[in-house]
Amino acid sequence: MKNIEIDKFKVTSNISLKNSETKLVIDDAKSELKSIRKKLGEWQNIMYAHDKHAVLVCLQGMDTSGKDSLVREVFKEFNVRGIECHSFKVPTDLERGHDYLWRHYLVLPQRGKFGVFNRTHYENVLVTRVHPEYILGENIPGIETVDDVNEAFWDKRFEQINNFEKHLADNGTIIFKFFLNLSKEEQKSRLLRRLDKPEKNWKFSPDDLKERKLWDKYQDCYQDAINRTSKRHAPWYTIPADDKPTARLLVAKILHDNLIKYTDITEPELNDKIKANLESYKAQLANE
Image (cartoon, rainbow, N blue to C red; front, side, top):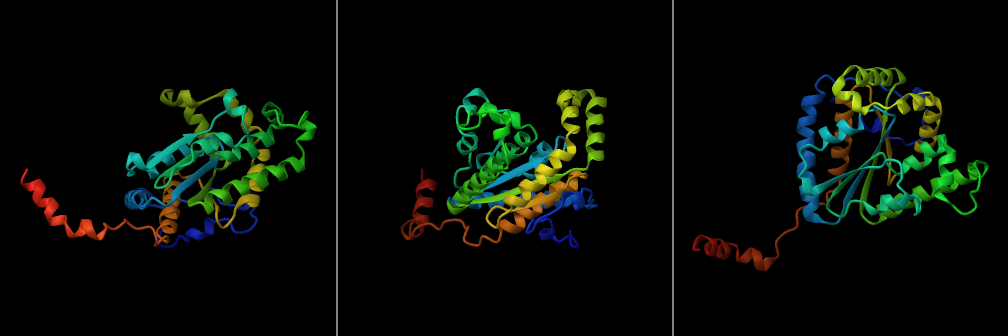
């Protein structure tokens, strides 16, 4: 990692996904990840005790980009009390009965905890933008036909998402957004592995192939969403995802290197009265 500049993956100006790398291989990625994820787990314990911040990690990427395994490997050293992961699938009838951000508000991490969104509120400007007919199921006033789902509609939705994240950041949530940038060729290879290995068959759906045919449209929508919503308080990072160990290490490294900058996050000190009586408390326990 000595020659890898982490900030180069941060989106600070408009990007072109066609010109963004998908393949990066760091030889010792697995061993480096072991060290960093342990440090992350220790930092989370301190944040839990500090109890003034939360961390929200948002993961987006095309099917097979490695989101599930990344969650497993990056957060392996966390105390289970300090992290919650939520995967957002097709909205239920109950969820469609509320505004599109409602289900995300319900599971935001509380102070002291990490929350991981495996697929996120951005599905509402990605899948629904590729398939605007899905918007009609939200029963939004004034949206009667697909023609009503126009550019003005998307402009408003992006504004709402930016406001949502700004509100979270202003109230103590540290936000990271990662786009796992997978090549179309690597996705093909991973889909074939799902078909070739019986233990992986359950992950495959014929819909994966239908959505793959819309690859270019999805890439355009991802690019637009990233460019419109990468803000200082909620930055996007584009992570080369063709090599899974490298992608996991980069995400862990970005989290660690940014979080340790929060020097105000420290373990709370005991008050003077308790400090002064520590020896007395020890004696009480010793003499039971």
